[in-house]
Amino acid sequence: MRPFTYVRAESVPDALNGAHTADTLFLAGGTELLNWARIGIESPRRLVDIGRLPGLDEIVSHGDGLRIGALARLNDVAQDPRVETSYPVLAQAILKAASAQLRNLATIGGNPVQRTRCPYFRSHDPVACNKREPGSGCAALHGANERLAIFGWTEGCVAVQPSDPAVALACLDAVIITEHVEGGRRIPAAEFHTLPADDPAAHNVLRPGELITGIELGAPAPKSAYVKVRERQSYEFALVSAAAAVEVQDGLIARARLALGSVAPRPWRLYEAEQALVGLRPGSPDLLDAVTSGFADSRPLSSNAYKIPLARNTALRALELALEA
Ligand SMILES: Cc1cc2nc3c(=O)[nH]c(=O)nc-3n(C[C@H](O)[C@H](O)[C@H](O)COP(=O)(O)OP(=O)(O)OC[C@H]3O[C@@H](n4cnc5c(N)ncnc54)[C@H](O)[C@@H]3O)c2cc1C
Image: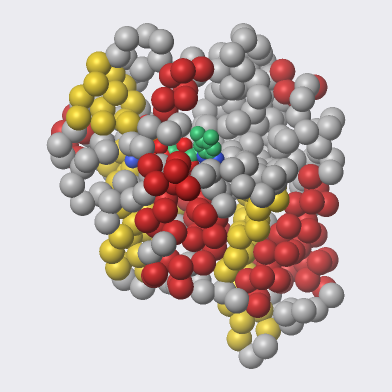
């Protein structure tokens, strides 16, 4: 591991001023970053510890919704009564992520910044991976790709984004709030992660030194649910996951939002399916066709065709649970 300097920021301006160079990274809970340093994914020259920035761990009412500080711990977010009641999809997604010990340390701001679990990206040995070594290729394209993408991939990268909370945030149309020495931004959660068609080496839209300060949730979505399919029931990343949020008026679906996880380089909204669901009756056999319409642009890799029916059925199950909530 390369030697690095460590500084603790005492305020947001302090953090921004201390992190304007490309070889500087923020340290929040450290559950992801320290693994990167161990494996060799990152070798920052400087870490700016943001873990004690005052006020950034608070969850406060904001208009119709909530503003969650970036340093709120995952378990604190999931166990907040306002999140449990008004955004069950987010509480469920968080409680299905990682382990209780990790969730006590990991922050909601650091979670979407986690990087792919693609075995080639995480390899200890040098292998072709455009995210590890830009221009080196993608060993996963014809390699061990059974857990990788069915949407949004290119020959340059077939990795998936593994976060559970990010899927719920994309489904809820959450907004990620940032600060930067050149000005902050409001980034829709569904657009936070980048696609390899733009740049196979990139993971998300953050600029060097850009600090996530909070996440805004809009109007409550009490009829919402998260389903995670994995090889064991706890402490495991998803094969696929689905988040659903619905509104029902006069016995018919008036609005539906669906997002899939672990199927693409970003949480994948099924916009066509969302449109097709409007006007259907909960329990209708037509729900399956409506969900299936969101898969027109799915493309399997050599070893993961199973993910297409699995993801479709997971989305349908999440939708049914949201309708029952
Ligand atoms: C064994 C294991 C199992 C896991 N399983 C799951 C799982 O099933 N589902 C799931 O969703 N996640 C899972 N995770 C990921 C875990 O949730 C993340 O590691 C965690 O949420 C990252 O948060 P952190 O505060 O520890 O970030 P850190 O490790 O401190 O930082 C991670 C990255 O985010 C950046 N960063 C952190 N905070 C900010 C900020 N406010 N602004 C800008 N950049 C920031 C850092 O610079 C760094 O680049 C797992 C992790 C481990 C180690």
